[in-house]
Image (cartoon, rainbow, N blue to C red; front, side):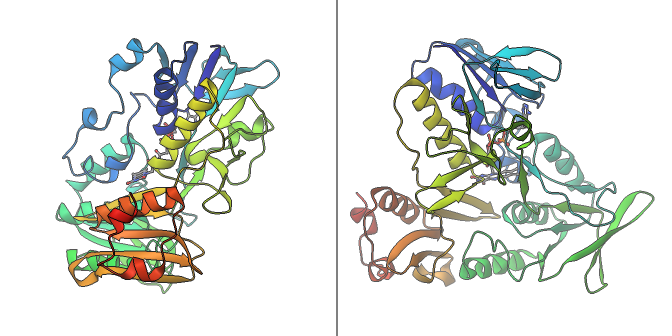
Length: 405
Ligand code: FAD
């Protein structure tokens, strides 16, 4: 019992509340989020919500009933502005003080801004919140030419949706390949091909010098080489910054993320941090990492809830990710950076293959395209810590699914 205050009403915050009640926690739960509505999922914002195949109800994490039925006090549009660690209270923007026994920081992240002139023009937008998605959804019906700055997951998902809506789309990526932070070269190249075949213009290795505009609105994007790509809408997807200021001001350790230990506790034993905002020691990476995914938010929330209602041990969930770009789904199991060798299983020309990433003989993870069963098998193999040789991985006759059971 006691009071758990959760700061941040997104994927991780909501899951903490839900899991606490599922585990029989009978104390007070306050979930304070600074967005106006009910907690929702972000992944559809750049996918089915953007294209209109899902509406507001379709992206909600829980309906109104959940909060009353489970006695979760949801504060909407309430920003937590300060933590008093000595008195164990948080203060909201409207001046209310709330006492806690344990505090969970699930503050998420915010979009990195493009540091060039013109980035503040109208019709330059980012995509993070449902409010952003609403604006973009409307724009898709009224603009013709879009430039997407940043060839990461969100930029590429947006590009696919905008092309599908009949717009002319250019993706500008500063690095030599798309999604380079998170996928292998082979997968980058495959997706560049996917987008080009959809009609997206993909410009690689091109920096943005400035956004040009007229009467306060963007009209194009000027690249490093001086060329200007015309645009009625510029969507910036160049990564995020974790929301750490609240923790920092409270004197908690911060290092591109709120620093937590193996139990997801901050430098204050009564304060946890989870999801996009937390940097945690990952046994799978062998170092502290900060991950931005639903899996990470949900599993960390469950872990903290388990710890608050019993003994949870150290957090060691296998990370996994997905992205849907047009009709192509990419699923990633494990953390593959630091690999020195890849083996491919399946047929790339059919768009159904997995790229297994190894460091020496150790399997770090795999990227699967159109191979959901293999993705699931790799997750189980990584969870079990079972050895899988590169030869076994590459051999389509080797029963991966059977082996992982
Ligand atoms: P969030 O869900 O961002 O929630 C944090 C909440 O805290 C926000 O509502 C924020 O406004 C609020 N907040 C911040 N500061 C305060 C404060 N001081 N007081 C009160 N509230 C505060 N992941 C995938 O795995 N697959 C995908 O396909 C995928 N697609 C995505 C598409 C888009 C467009 C976006 C934006 C993200 C996508 N993600 C995807 C990432 C995934 O949504 C995030 O990793 C996940 O939402 C993280 O959960 P979180 O609870 O840590 O943060």
